[in-house]
Image (cartoon, rainbow, N blue to C red; front, top):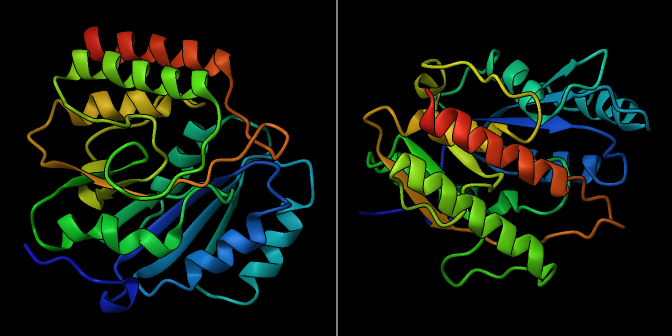
Length: 240
Protein backbone atom coordinates (compact mmCIF):
# COMPACT_ATOMS: atom_id res chain seq x y z
CA UNK A 1 0.00 0.00 0.00
CA UNK A 2 1.70 3.21 -1.19
CA UNK A 3 0.58 6.53 0.31
CA UNK A 4 1.53 10.04 -0.95
CA UNK A 5 4.43 11.58 0.96
CA UNK A 6 2.98 15.09 0.93
CA UNK A 7 0.11 17.18 -0.41
CA UNK A 8 2.34 18.19 -3.33
CA UNK A 9 2.08 14.63 -4.67
CA UNK A 10 -1.72 14.78 -5.12
CA UNK A 11 -3.69 16.29 -8.00
CA UNK A 12 -6.73 18.50 -7.09
CA UNK A 13 -9.48 16.10 -6.08
CA UNK A 14 -10.86 17.39 -2.80
CA UNK A 15 -13.82 19.49 -1.72
CA UNK A 16 -13.27 20.96 1.73
CA UNK A 17 -16.46 21.94 3.56
CA UNK A 18 -15.92 24.45 6.35
CA UNK A 19 -18.67 25.47 8.79
CA UNK A 20 -17.94 28.87 10.36
CA UNK A 21 -19.40 30.73 13.31
CA UNK A 22 -17.71 33.75 14.89
CA UNK A 23 -14.19 32.77 13.85
CA UNK A 24 -12.93 36.20 12.84
CA UNK A 25 -9.65 35.69 14.75
CA UNK A 26 -8.62 32.59 12.80
CA UNK A 27 -10.71 32.15 9.65
CA UNK A 28 -8.49 34.06 7.21
CA UNK A 29 -5.43 32.06 8.25
CA UNK A 30 -7.28 28.75 8.03
CA UNK A 31 -8.64 29.61 4.57
CA UNK A 32 -5.16 30.52 3.35
CA UNK A 33 -3.70 27.29 4.70
CA UNK A 34 -6.46 25.17 3.14
CA UNK A 35 -6.07 26.79 -0.28
CA UNK A 36 -2.29 26.33 -0.13
CA UNK A 37 -2.79 22.56 -0.28
CA UNK A 38 -2.54 21.10 -3.80
CA UNK A 39 -5.34 18.47 -3.37
CA UNK A 40 -7.96 21.19 -2.77
CA UNK A 41 -10.20 21.62 -5.80
CA UNK A 42 -12.81 23.74 -4.02
CA UNK A 43 -13.48 25.20 -0.58
CA UNK A 44 -17.14 25.54 0.41
CA UNK A 45 -17.57 27.80 3.43
CA UNK A 46 -20.90 28.04 5.22
CA UNK A 47 -21.14 31.03 7.54
CA UNK A 48 -23.69 30.11 10.21
CA UNK A 49 -24.90 33.67 10.90
CA UNK A 50 -21.67 34.92 12.50
CA UNK A 51 -22.00 38.10 14.53
CA UNK A 52 -18.38 39.26 14.29
CA UNK A 53 -16.42 40.26 11.18
CA UNK A 54 -16.19 36.67 9.86
CA UNK A 55 -18.42 37.27 6.83
CA UNK A 56 -16.47 40.38 5.78
CA UNK A 57 -13.20 38.47 5.98
CA UNK A 58 -14.66 35.59 3.99
CA UNK A 59 -15.78 37.93 1.22
CA UNK A 60 -12.27 39.33 1.02
CA UNK A 61 -10.82 35.81 0.83
CA UNK A 62 -13.28 34.77 -1.89
CA UNK A 63 -12.37 37.78 -4.02
CA UNK A 64 -8.83 36.41 -4.29
CA UNK A 65 -9.48 32.75 -5.15
CA UNK A 66 -12.17 31.31 -7.46
CA UNK A 67 -12.05 27.96 -5.64
CA UNK A 68 -13.95 29.50 -2.71
CA UNK A 69 -17.74 29.19 -2.63
CA UNK A 70 -19.48 31.17 0.11
CA UNK A 71 -22.85 30.23 1.58
CA UNK A 72 -24.59 31.94 4.48
CA UNK A 73 -27.34 31.06 6.95
CA UNK A 74 -29.62 33.97 7.96
CA UNK A 75 -29.94 32.47 11.45
CA UNK A 76 -27.51 30.42 13.52
CA UNK A 77 -28.38 26.72 13.28
CA UNK A 78 -25.25 24.78 14.24
CA UNK A 79 -22.39 22.77 12.76
CA UNK A 80 -24.55 19.93 11.46
CA UNK A 81 -26.86 22.33 9.64
CA UNK A 82 -23.90 24.14 8.08
CA UNK A 83 -22.42 20.85 6.87
CA UNK A 84 -25.79 19.77 5.46
CA UNK A 85 -25.86 22.98 3.43
CA UNK A 86 -22.26 22.56 2.28
CA UNK A 87 -22.54 18.87 1.37
CA UNK A 88 -25.35 19.70 -1.06
CA UNK A 89 -22.93 21.68 -3.25
CA UNK A 90 -19.81 19.51 -3.48
CA UNK A 91 -18.34 18.67 -6.89
CA UNK A 92 -15.04 16.87 -6.21
CA UNK A 93 -14.78 13.08 -5.77
CA UNK A 94 -13.65 13.38 -2.13
CA UNK A 95 -15.14 15.54 0.64
CA UNK A 96 -13.45 16.58 3.89
CA UNK A 97 -14.79 18.47 6.92
CA UNK A 98 -12.51 21.30 8.10
CA UNK A 99 -13.17 23.46 11.17
CA UNK A 100 -12.49 27.19 10.91
CA UNK A 101 -10.18 27.34 13.92
CA UNK A 102 -6.54 26.33 14.10
CA UNK A 103 -6.96 22.95 15.83
CA UNK A 104 -6.39 20.78 12.74
CA UNK A 105 -3.60 20.96 10.15
CA UNK A 106 -4.54 21.16 6.43
CA UNK A 107 -0.92 20.25 5.72
CA UNK A 108 -1.90 16.68 6.70
CA UNK A 109 -4.57 16.17 4.03
CA UNK A 110 -2.30 13.67 2.30
CA UNK A 111 -2.41 11.44 5.39
CA UNK A 112 -6.20 11.28 5.22
CA UNK A 113 -6.27 10.87 1.46
CA UNK A 114 -3.73 8.05 1.47
CA UNK A 115 -6.12 5.13 2.13
CA UNK A 116 -8.67 6.70 -0.24
CA UNK A 117 -6.33 7.25 -3.19
CA UNK A 118 -4.86 3.77 -2.82
CA UNK A 119 -8.34 2.35 -3.38
CA UNK A 120 -8.70 0.88 0.10
CA UNK A 121 -11.18 3.23 1.81
CA UNK A 122 -14.59 4.84 1.37
CA UNK A 123 -14.43 6.81 4.62
CA UNK A 124 -11.37 7.97 6.59
CA UNK A 125 -11.37 9.40 10.13
CA UNK A 126 -8.42 11.37 11.46
CA UNK A 127 -7.72 10.25 15.02
CA UNK A 128 -6.29 12.66 17.58
CA UNK A 129 -5.62 9.79 20.00
CA UNK A 130 -3.71 7.23 17.98
CA UNK A 131 -0.19 6.96 16.63
CA UNK A 132 2.77 9.25 17.18
CA UNK A 133 1.46 12.59 15.87
CA UNK A 134 1.73 15.60 18.20
CA UNK A 135 -1.20 17.00 20.14
CA UNK A 136 -1.60 19.82 22.62
CA UNK A 137 -2.15 18.74 26.23
CA UNK A 138 -5.39 20.26 27.55
CA UNK A 139 -8.47 19.19 29.52
CA UNK A 140 -8.44 15.76 31.21
CA UNK A 141 -12.21 15.46 31.57
CA UNK A 142 -12.76 16.64 28.02
CA UNK A 143 -10.52 13.81 26.80
CA UNK A 144 -12.33 11.33 29.05
CA UNK A 145 -15.66 12.50 27.65
CA UNK A 146 -14.45 12.07 24.07
CA UNK A 147 -13.21 8.55 24.75
CA UNK A 148 -16.43 7.54 26.55
CA UNK A 149 -18.59 8.86 23.71
CA UNK A 150 -16.42 6.97 21.23
CA UNK A 151 -16.78 3.80 23.32
CA UNK A 152 -20.58 4.12 23.50
CA UNK A 153 -20.71 4.84 19.77
CA UNK A 154 -18.56 1.78 19.02
CA UNK A 155 -20.86 -0.40 21.12
CA UNK A 156 -23.86 0.59 19.01
CA UNK A 157 -22.10 0.57 15.62
CA UNK A 158 -19.72 -2.39 16.11
CA UNK A 159 -16.84 -0.21 14.86
CA UNK A 160 -13.49 0.09 16.63
CA UNK A 161 -12.80 3.80 16.19
CA UNK A 162 -10.51 5.60 18.61
CA UNK A 163 -11.92 9.10 17.93
CA UNK A 164 -15.53 9.31 16.79
CA UNK A 165 -15.74 13.03 17.64
CA UNK A 166 -12.86 14.10 15.39
CA UNK A 167 -13.47 16.95 12.97
CA UNK A 168 -11.40 15.36 10.19
CA UNK A 169 -13.82 13.04 8.42
CA UNK A 170 -13.16 12.28 4.75
CA UNK A 171 -15.74 10.69 2.44
CA UNK A 172 -16.09 9.60 -1.13
CA UNK A 173 -18.70 12.07 -2.39
CA UNK A 174 -21.12 9.30 -3.39
CA UNK A 175 -21.19 8.10 0.24
CA UNK A 176 -22.70 11.38 1.40
CA UNK A 177 -25.52 11.00 -1.13
CA UNK A 178 -26.80 7.90 0.68
CA UNK A 179 -28.26 9.79 3.64
CA UNK A 180 -29.29 13.22 4.93
CA UNK A 181 -27.80 14.84 8.01
CA UNK A 182 -30.61 15.48 10.51
CA UNK A 183 -28.78 16.91 13.51
CA UNK A 184 -28.16 20.66 13.47
CA UNK A 185 -25.41 20.92 16.09
CA UNK A 186 -22.49 18.74 17.19
CA UNK A 187 -24.73 15.67 17.10
CA UNK A 188 -23.57 15.42 13.50
CA UNK A 189 -20.55 13.39 14.64
CA UNK A 190 -22.32 10.38 16.23
CA UNK A 191 -25.16 10.60 13.69
CA UNK A 192 -22.97 10.26 10.61
CA UNK A 193 -20.86 7.59 12.30
CA UNK A 194 -23.95 5.51 13.01
CA UNK A 195 -25.24 5.98 9.48
CA UNK A 196 -22.04 4.99 7.69
CA UNK A 197 -21.79 1.90 9.90
CA UNK A 198 -24.97 0.51 8.30
CA UNK A 199 -23.51 0.41 4.81
CA UNK A 200 -20.90 -1.97 3.48
CA UNK A 201 -18.22 0.73 3.56
CA UNK A 202 -14.49 0.43 4.05
CA UNK A 203 -13.74 2.70 7.01
CA UNK A 204 -10.16 3.62 7.90
CA UNK A 205 -8.61 5.67 10.70
CA UNK A 206 -5.28 7.52 10.49
CA UNK A 207 -3.30 9.43 13.07
CA UNK A 208 -3.34 13.23 12.84
CA UNK A 209 -1.91 16.13 14.81
CA UNK A 210 -4.16 18.16 17.09
CA UNK A 211 -3.58 21.73 18.23
CA UNK A 212 -6.49 22.10 20.63
CA UNK A 213 -7.56 25.47 21.94
CA UNK A 214 -8.92 26.53 25.32
CA UNK A 215 -12.33 28.05 25.96
CA UNK A 216 -10.61 31.41 26.41
CA UNK A 217 -9.22 30.96 22.89
CA UNK A 218 -12.67 30.33 21.44
CA UNK A 219 -13.51 26.65 21.89
CA UNK A 220 -17.29 26.26 21.66
CA UNK A 221 -18.24 22.66 22.47
CA UNK A 222 -19.30 22.08 26.09
CA UNK A 223 -20.83 19.55 28.46
CA UNK A 224 -24.33 20.09 27.07
CA UNK A 225 -23.08 18.98 23.68
CA UNK A 226 -21.70 15.84 25.33
CA UNK A 227 -25.16 14.89 26.58
CA UNK A 228 -26.59 15.70 23.16
CA UNK A 229 -24.00 13.42 21.56
CA UNK A 230 -25.01 10.61 23.92
CA UNK A 231 -28.65 11.14 22.92
CA UNK A 232 -27.66 10.90 19.26
CA UNK A 233 -25.65 7.72 19.85
CA UNK A 234 -28.75 6.10 21.31
CA UNK A 235 -31.11 7.56 18.72
CA UNK A 236 -29.13 6.69 15.59
CA UNK A 237 -27.19 3.72 16.91
CA UNK A 238 -30.01 1.76 18.53
CA UNK A 239 -33.31 2.95 17.12
CA UNK A 240 -32.70 3.49 13.38
